[in-house]
Image (cartoon, rainbow, N blue to C red; front, side, top):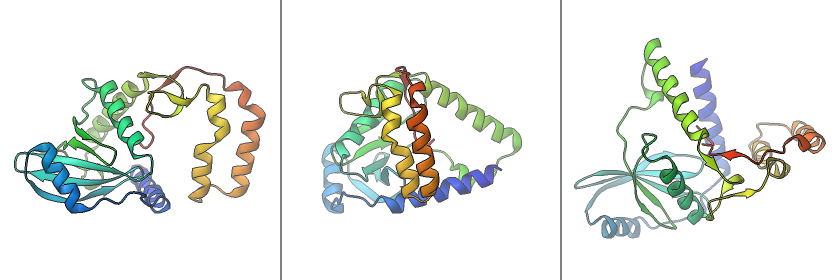
Amino acid sequence: MLRGLRNATKWVSRKSTRARSSHLRIDPEKLRRSLEDNLLERVTYLGDLSSGTSYITKLVTTERGRYVLKIPRHKDASVLAFRQQFAFRALQGRLPIPTIRLATEQFVLEDYIFGRNLDKVSLQKAQEKHVFTLLGKYLKTIHQTKTTGFGAIGVDGKGQFATLRLYSRVSTWLTRLAGLNLISAQEYNHLIEYLNKYDFHLTSVETVMLHNDY
């Protein structure tokens, strides 16, 4: 079942990546010079690391360190960079998260965390239980972090909707799922109709941090 979940996650990620081509183009040499000017170190390697739904990530090595470079895929790059810093400030010291070294309107540079990719290792049952129990504890910590407003956090540190009901009416995630052909037009219309009929129950104004693609 775990293998099936991983494969499904990879498939959704690939679909999302294809559906959102990057609006940003950064000249590699200018990027390298900018990193060297800010880090005061010579960049010895700059190459692709992975391709997520929100960021293109690259591995950066220098004479003294190793970093992860995140380049937002969207036009609102500065907002995404702000969200990274917002999450870092909220969770620093509570979770094993990387330190942000640079955050600009075009990219975010973080310390590299050494480890092994779960997709590339074979775990014994006890190890697997330990890893996913730990993951659950991390999620619990994230979900106990109070925020203000619903939806994506803006540069003011608040979500753009005051209540869960207002957020649900925008149906951001339903639109995204339909765009990726993960739900049919009939299912989409049915869900919208259901929300319109029953969303008066969604009166909550208490909100917490959520990691979208955990």
